[in-house]
Length: 220
Image 1 (tube, one colour):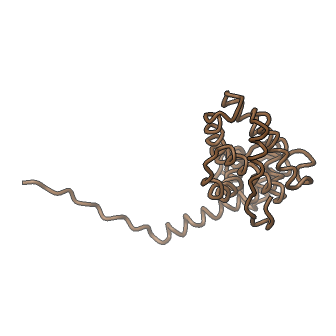
Image 2 (tube, one colour):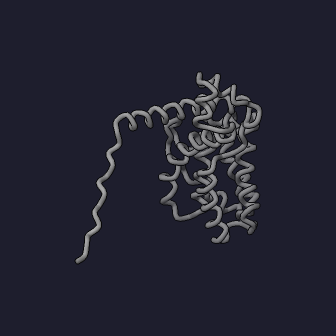
Image 3 (tube, one colour):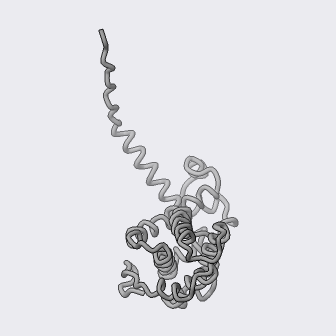
């Protein structure tokens, strides 16, 4: 005789558990959102836990329920800001078959967001990063473009250093929020030139119009 294994019934989550999880998520979001202006103003290394406790209006004990270090909080804040931006950019560029155009368009859109959103731009410039998800998508496009022969540079680590370095440090300059669309084109052109892209191909990649954004109605 054979026995069929009994399927365990799915456990129904108690409404108090659901409510508690929702409250935890809300508190975590409060800490992150309160921390963003602190990091933007003081940078990634200067703030201490008491700064974030005061900004969020919580106790140190509550802070430690969600984050053990200021670095963990910084990573969460970066993910919150940058990942939201990437989520709006990826659907726009993912249908483009040319990896160089895809990378260039995404970089221009990212820079535009950073210059039109003062808090986002200040945060990026202060922490000197573009975020893990942004790096992941950019890295994939860079690798594909390198394999396609668009770059004279064949060292992927160096290519990433050029792309992310130029983007990050250009956002830290006084001109970052003064040059508008022309500045975005200038920054991306500098990245492509440093990677060794043919000038004619650079012109082609940068000639592609971008869609309007929630912050700007006219395309670049």
